[in-house]
Length: 107
Image 1: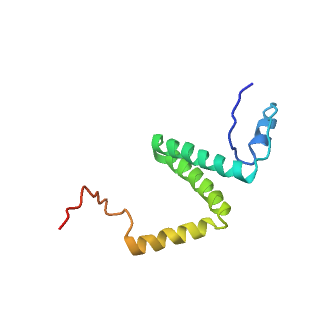
Image 2: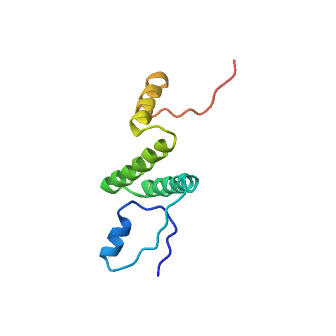
Image 3: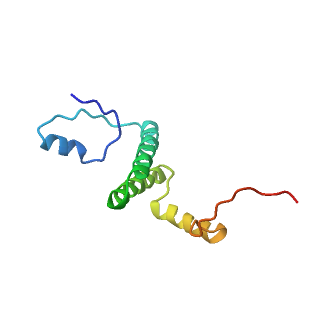
C-alpha cells in the first residue's frame, strides 16, 4: 500500500485500476479543492524548477492546467487570465528585457 493524499487528474483512478490495483478516493469539498489546487500548484512549481527541455514544458503545462481550475473557482477562465496578463504587459511591460531593479534612490 502506498499513501498519496493528494489531488490527481481525473483519469488516474482508471489508470490505477488498469494496472490491477485499487485506488481509494473521495470527492473534495470546494474549500478542500481550492487548498489542494494551491498545494498542487506549488508542487508543479518545484517540478518546473528542477526540469529542463521537454520535461520543463510538460511541467509548465501541468501548471497551466492547475491555473485553469483556480481561475474557474474565481468564476473566470484561463483565457481571461491570459487576457489579463496581456493587458498588464501592455500597461507595465513584460519580462522580455531581463531588467533587474537593484534599488531606487530618493530625489
